[in-house]
Length: 312
Image 1 (cartoon, rainbow, N blue to C red):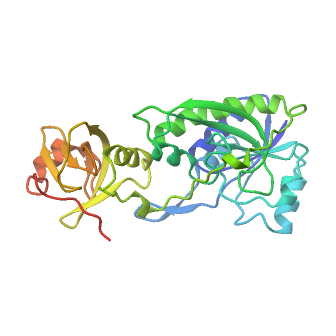
Image 2: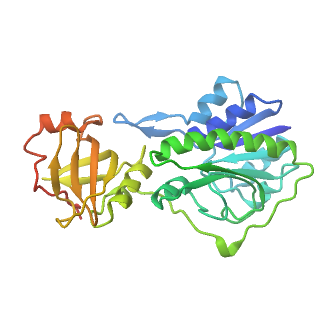
Image 3: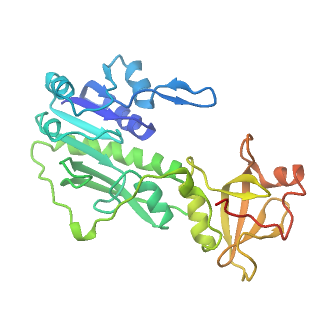
């Protein structure tokens, strides 16, 4: 098939690589415009753009697809199908109907569960034990199109958004190739609207820890917000980011957010119930470090009885 590919982040680049390694022909790539990143705010290309340029594929980066010129540009490619993976722009209905087989989307949830931009984070936040990938025939709604294929994926107790996305990228690429083989005969199955749920866009403020939640909820929060925006709290006006946390099955009647114990390699923090044991922390301007290194360097900051707090 002659394919137009539209995507932006790493998971999209992984699916693009799968197509490039197949018998299909990627004739053009659409991706988000270069964005300023890092302390220097230098413009950086998306992973999809970098991969496409490496393979000498035409790259287009429009600010919007809702213009006559954008619609015409896609039509001129005369593609068999358009594959969309975490692109970040809305495709108008005219474009959805332009390729021979329309546009299909690789969505990282088992639709209709977790429609929207943050399905992987939401699955971890909800402590789900399973998620998956849906290949969907796109329509004018938000992740409401007919289901072409689904594949499940287990969520381990150690999975972060980063590690789970890596798993989903692999099975997503496989499901995509299987779907393309059957496009001439496959019939989209309508989604069950009564089972639909939405995974809203993540903001930095979402990652602030609420210590009144259960230890398990907070552990899920820490896993869900890696690699971005990373769960955080404050202690003595210092913003601390949290990694690698687990639940300690110990009764707790202390103030939520209070440091209960400073161990050789971790700190135990009171939550709404039980304790949270954190083994990796990050101070402002520093890299994530093992808890014992930060404790040794800042013994007065992490002491039993000191409380983390929300900076509202």
